[in-house]
Length: 572
Image 1 (cartoon, one colour):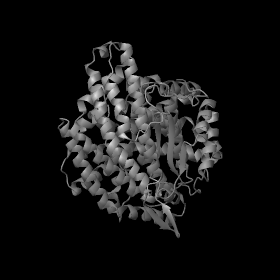
Image 2 (cartoon, helix red, strand yellow):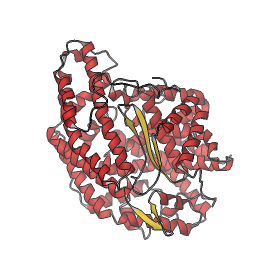
Image 3 (cartoon, rainbow, N blue to C red):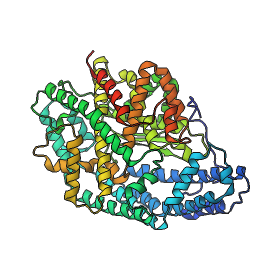
Image 4 (cartoon, rainbow, N blue to C red):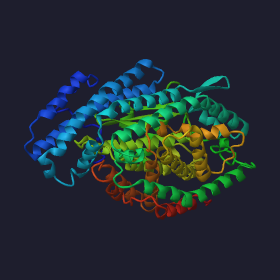
């Protein structure tokens, strides 16, 4: 559907399920699956209706799980909410997975499948075929255990706090002190957080060991020699390979790292220090006070509405509607899981945004990012096929990262002219830095899963070797134990294996849209919205093409973008 001011007004009453049914109760869900399994299908029209009814059922089940996940992450210290989520993950999801497999197996044998109109069903057909090929009943309890371990990691992280200046702070709230001009303050804050994380290093290592064993077993059960092969197929990476990822690592090494190290040397010189330490990376290098763009979550939301209204009145109306429907939880607090996300409520077809705002500049970026995901959800909410209301992650992240850049000129809602210039520079420098970190994390994942049975010492050695390759030249003297375990901060390693290079691929796409916007902002935004409306209904290269982008993440694609970023960072 088009992104229109009333895009959130439309409701989607169910045609197959009862909206008031209990989708956390398998006895209420199972008859729907049985009905679909037994329904006669004698025509293409009947098959299309069957697919839509199946999508509707899974949307309602998904929304039940999503709401429980939201409750748990908003209140990790509430044991009842945690148990409710785990109950769903342990009882409903495995049973639904088995029942869905029976429907998928039926689908791939139907003669009408070959008569479905192309290209409308091309992507769905490919996804279902993949799922049938990968499904193994013996993997269901292993996947449940994998989810339990991920929940344990979230629970540990969400409840870590430190006492600073007589007050308890979440680790996210401590980030504000890393922007203080006083180097002693920054160091004290950084060390407090690092030491608190180190207290959990053995638990994290044990959790990760269990996850590695589970994932290798899951791959073997599915007939794969390597978890890498299994996971690439499971993630639907139809359009690129591990070798393409290695080429991305090389592209970052050649096109990004020289600029990153040049920027870090400039930072060291401007700070007037002999060497950069980990607590020197977030402060203004000229000693200016930290950017404090807002005080409360309500202020953050209000200013963001104004940003979007200026960028595009329609997007402004949509974001304001999201706010007024209670679909935002923005502020950091004790007991809240770390990080930020946009969760789609698949039955109501609405976005929910979760984050940990602490009054920092990066919180503005996070909200713009998650709003981009929310606009994506709204743009394709009318598609009756659930799978098409979710694009591949490589393009979902184009939606979010592009919004960070497209909205940048309107951020004077948060900053005066001088601070906006500082903010823009900081954002571009952050893109250079994150590309290096993405390459490092992705390369580490490839090492982890191609060296089964490795020891903790071997793991640390591999991490340190990659940190030498991709790291920005930080002095870790006296902090060697922190450096050895720094990878444990990256939740994707624990919860979403191999899901991280998507950010690198998408960042290249977002920079491409940023370059388009410098030539014609209106046309770039129009292409952005047009691509979002496709949802996941087309293959990945076609989604990029709809936004006027090439699906390419080589040095050939990355080098000219880095040149443009470097030019934008030069003083006027």
